[in-house]
Amino acid sequence: MNTANVSTPDDSVRGEVARLRALGATSVVIIGGGINGIATFRDLAMQGVDVVLVERSDFGSGATAASSHMIHGGLRYLENGELRLVRESVRERNGLLRTAPHFVKPLQTTIPIYATFSGLIAAPLRILRHSPGRTHRERGALMIKVGLSLYDTFSRDNGTVPRHRFLGRRKSLDLLPALDPAVKYTATYFDASVHSPERLALDLVLDGVDAHADAHAVNYVEAVGLSGDSVRLRDVESGVEFDLRADVIVNASGPWTDLTNEALGRPTAYMGGTKGSHIVLDCPELLTATGGHEIFFEHSDGRIVLIYPLHGRVLVGTTDLDADPRQPAVCTEAEVDYFFDLIGHVFPNIRVDRSDIVFRYSGIRPLPRHDAISPGLVSRDYRIEVDDERDGAPVISLIGGKWTTFRALGETLADRVLELLGRDRTCSTEGVPIGGGRGFPATYAERQLWFTHHCATTDPERREQLLSRYGTRAADVARFIAQGTDEPIVDGALSTREVAYLGQYERVEHLADVVLRRTALAFIGGIRHEHLAEIADVMAAELGWDDGRVRAEVDRCEEDLAVYHGANVRG
Image 1 (cartoon, rainbow, N blue to C red):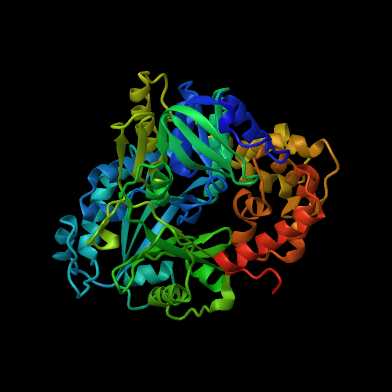
Image 2: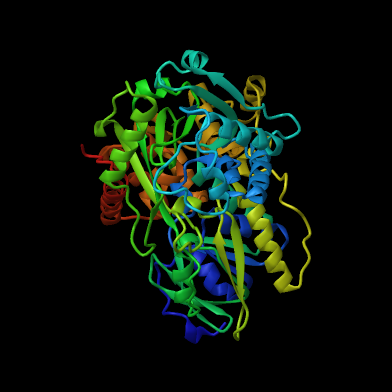
């Protein structure tokens, strides 16, 4: 390695970064640790390819963390004529129910319907990517029935997924009594949800690292330049910069793809992402009203929105607004008003207000540039662009992509990389269990047997908590916990040894990594200043923080929670 291109050594450089600096060269560098970059990393590692993944923040902290927590086949994509995407989406959804059963669960989805024939003219216009005009006509029962019948043909997975069902007003209100009594019908079908998307992303990272000795994944490292076949990297934590040579460079930085290419000196104009926001409500009345269903419907402005139970709270979303990726995405008060309005659209007798909000979040979708096309009509499909016309390593840019199809997308992108490397695929990721989904106990009896063998010393409530958080990786966590003195913290939602485990094995760098992504503590609300201090004190012992760093981490986490998530931990 050319040491002239490495900044002066710094004692604060982290071990993973030090290893990258010593590495000097690799076959593939992937820029962007969102779900699609991570899936590509795992796929290439499983092929035995030397690969390095770098993420400028924490893994899964960008668009990946701002999803609607859905793993879905894309029912609404049918009316856009995106049959390929629907077919791929339902196949991947069905696959994830088997390969990631610790995080991906079936989700019964109900559509309230207020008209019978409405929308039949507008639908063909949507397929042609035309707006149906200024006067919105909602989708009626006949149109939804046709769509769901077609969806069933893609979705049923050899009969394992139930067919949709239609109910009239009386039976609909018997099923969901709090629904607007003006509803004419409901339609119910099955999709899936992912209750811990950031943890699923981390499982993929750990799978990739385990699959190949020369697969490295590092968070808080950003790409800041490109010279020939060398990517200039900067450790965000220490400021140290160094070069890493690569045969192929993959830009999987989502909505920031153009900004990354600009930093690499290869400007593009591929992206046109839109902002989507959500709120999380602690409202028992609304939670009961959902009946355990996702309520998925068309609001009065034609936007498809959702209300559904998650972690004992109610998630409400989402918006679709043009956004600038150079600016942080924040859920605005106007969006909150919009969410309250949509709740009233289907549950008119349930009152919610801002005091019920325990968490809010916003992100930018990695959509392609769409110019005059309405944001809701922009394709959610993906494409790959290769810049190999200049000297140096070719740069592959990923445009688009959605949560549900990450495995298929990763495979497609990995195949393009293998082609450029002149290598053949040696295995498929299809059907391969993900992280803690390996050997996951499916029934109550299987769970009890699994606990007996793997978590025998943990109390019943705690072992359920660990299995839910880590899947079968909970066996490693429980073993680690048993090796030392363990004390409950955060009112029993965590323990001292569990936090120590996160610090040692889950690539945690900041307090917010634990609160926002390794756990759902912030999402469910109730996190307080003293909780942050408890976690930070344990992390300090593991990561070598002094008192000043502990205070800075708590202050920074509090600020992030307040500014980006509307959570006042001192309130």
